Length: 350
Image (cartoon, rainbow, N blue to C red; front, top):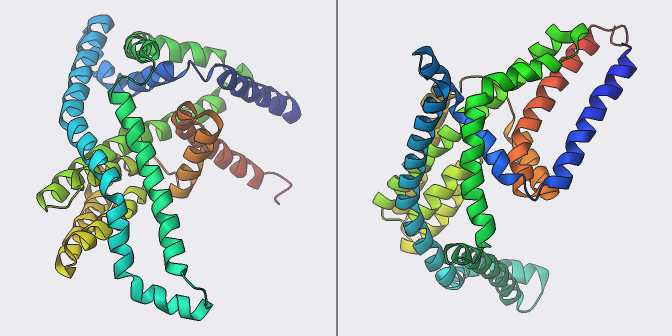
């Protein structure tokens, strides 16, 4: 096949997949989550298969243990998260007033330079309205979820469909991968399969590695900040851990929020330094011990590229788009690197 024909072929496949996601994005969430869970747990299936355990009971055992783990984590984290979120939504205006009072000398300097009356009040009111509105919306959303505000049919459908998808995908994963490889074009089978293996390596490194890193950091931050006595420390630690899916991003956001809350809570430099030291230690632990052991060099995706992909996917397809963002980003990264390597060996480059 000519290069033009190959490009048309793969672009047509990409367009068909995009159209499929766009048409059925409203019902894809439980399927994508189920497939992700199966992909995450498939190495355990491989290990159990080496001990001659049939795939069906092995999949059942793995999913039951995974469900127990998720249930325990939910029981331990949801009540304190809910309590601290509600408390934060109520006290945010007072925090903003306190922060603004401490920044008043600097605001007066700016006010004199720009010669604008009531500048501080205008800015403070704008910040208060926006932050309070955002926190109020978040707390209202969380409260509506916990109080059954979400449609029960969709909720129970998610709870039923997701485990079923994960169960059947665990059983059929090996057959599915063989079926996909059987569809690859024969004339470029080796090269295409090598690209697929590279994509799989990067996706596996992110899903199985970066999620584990984020979980570990979330636990470390939540426990350390709670022990240190930081108000909303559990909430800040968990959110910082979740945001650590994007390397460095979670620690930076957690550091900024934690330092501000510590300053407003006590006004003591030593306590602020203690909270900052917790995040610095977490980042040191992640960069020198956790990530090298858990991920290694398998991800190879720049944090800004991951952040852009998550935001772009979320703007296009919501939660479904964010879940699909990382696999698509990994695939684009591998294909782009292969295209550049091919270009540098071509007569156009020379």
